[in-house]
Image (tube, rainbow, N blue to C red; front, side, top):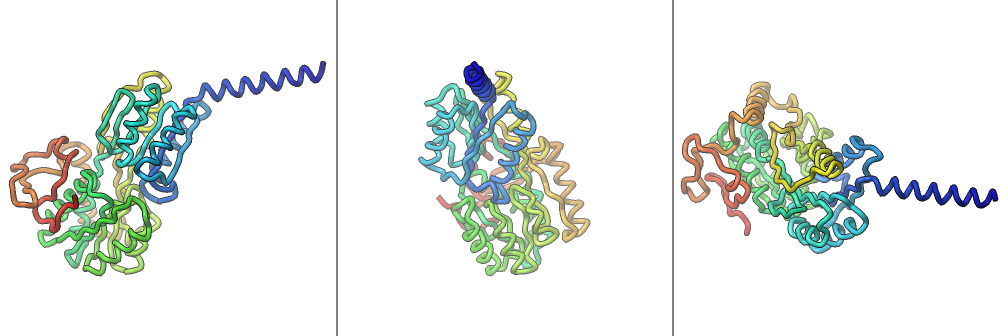
Length: 356
C-alpha cells in the first residue's frame, strides 16, 4: 500500500511538473556570435536575461550562440521550433531568409528578425537607428582627430553599415572639413584577429580615431596598444577601455523590446510589426563621454544627442550629395526611411567604392 502511494505521488508530481513546464512560454534566441563577445551578442543576451527577470517562472529561454548566417541557422531555428519554442528571435541580418523559410513550416510559432526587412504573418522585424549614434560619434571623431584621418572597420556592405559610415562621415565633416575616412571591410561580424588586423592597418595608414561596426573589443585593444588612438564602443559600452582609448559608445538596449514582444505572445496580442527605434525611444544609447573629450566637444555631442532624441534634427539633413556628385537632399530636406533602409551609396567626400 505504501509503495502504491509513493508511486502514485511520484506520478502526480511528474504530471504537475510537466504541466507547469507546458504552461511556460518558451523563448528562443539565435546568436551570430558568442554571448561573451563584449558587443552585439552580449547586448542581445542581456535582453534575454531581462525577459527572465521580468517574467520569472512564466517563461523558459533558450539560446544557441555562434550560429553561422546560412543553412546551419535554419537547422538551429527548426530545432528550437520542434522543441516547443513559442517565439524565436533571430538576431542578425544574414538570418533573414532562413527565418522566413522556417517560419513557413511553423505557422504557429512567432518569429522576430533583427535588422532585416522581410515579414510574414508570423514574422516581425526590428532594428535600431544606429546611424543616430554614429552622428554623435562622428561629431566627436571630427574634433578629436589630429591627423584628420578617421578609420572605420566595416563588417559587411549592407545598408545598415553603409548608413553608419555615411552618418559618421557627414557629422565629422561638419566640424572638421579636412577629415578623411579610410574604410577596411572585415567581412565578419565577430573575428577578433581580423578586427585587430583591420585596426592595425588603419592606424598604419595614419588613422588616430577608429570606429567599428564589428562586434569584439579587439579594435579597442589594438588602439590601446598603439597609444593616442581614439575608439568608440560598439553595441555595448566597452567601458573597460575607458576613459581612453574608448571615449564613448553606442549601446543597443534590446531589453524593453524583448520584454514587450514576449508579453504580447503571452497575452495573445502579438501581431506582425516593423519596428525601427532610435535614441528617442531608448533603443540606441550613447555611453558616457569620458573626460578625454574636451568639455566643449562633449557639450556639442550631447546637444546633438538631445536634438536627435526629440526629433528636432535628423542625421541625414540636406544639402547632401551622393559620392558621384549628384544631388541627393536639398537644403533642409531629410532622408526618408525607404532610402535609408536600402542605402547602397556613399555620400560625397568618402573615397573608395561600396563593395558589391
